[in-house]
Length: 354
Image (tube, rainbow, N blue to C red; front, side, top):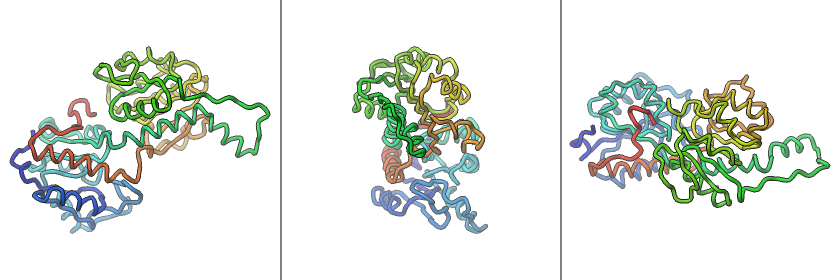
């Protein structure tokens, strides 16, 4: 439960790398709020939205003490300390701390890994950046679908071999095809919107089953297999939880019709990778576009690297030049609610961790 007295005039500490322009926008929008930002205590970004920063960065002993003193003087943190679960665990005993805004859309895994006490989980609200990545991930999902439908992997191999096929191979159309989206949250619904703009017919799963505009059929995860027999493409957007672990197993892949295109922009733990490889080898899955994996980085000896009908993306599908701005704007939206004493949005569930 948040401290309403603190929320009247809170102190916010920027715990992760963030461009000064976004910090100044925050200060300008909320002049009564104290914003602590010491860039010299934060690792430099190597690329846009590099929230962990350069791993070679080291603070001096004095800087380390200043960093933690700054964080412990705050009611609200922008980012996990050192952008990891250990940092979250280290700050959770701070008596002032009410709320942490996480940079990740799927922050539940880090919250679970921090192994906080029940009291800490009840006292500190953790919000995620869910929704910020919806459009880039939807576009990435469509990239995967179109790669599969247009067989760009075969074209790339022919080009590398300077081979001009004698027989021309017809390509599949997105228009009129059927898509199943596992996880019709913000990312899933944005994927559905983009897919429908291409003329696709969309069904999918949602934890709370209810009709959704533009979605032909909605079921829960238990009914996923029943949607797959007619699907031409399947996109997973589900988070990694005990309830979704290896949801895409051998039985689910077997329920797909031969030639299905599979895209994963959710979490790698949702997919049994051995079962996926078997489905690829049998032709049940004609192509897989994977932005996430059960273990990251993907092991060098994983067969997924060299499979001729797999695209491996190093968990970069959500990354865009606009990400830091969008996360800052999402944080400011929540800050307005916090100052008004209203419930925050995208709070990580302290029981199921999503």
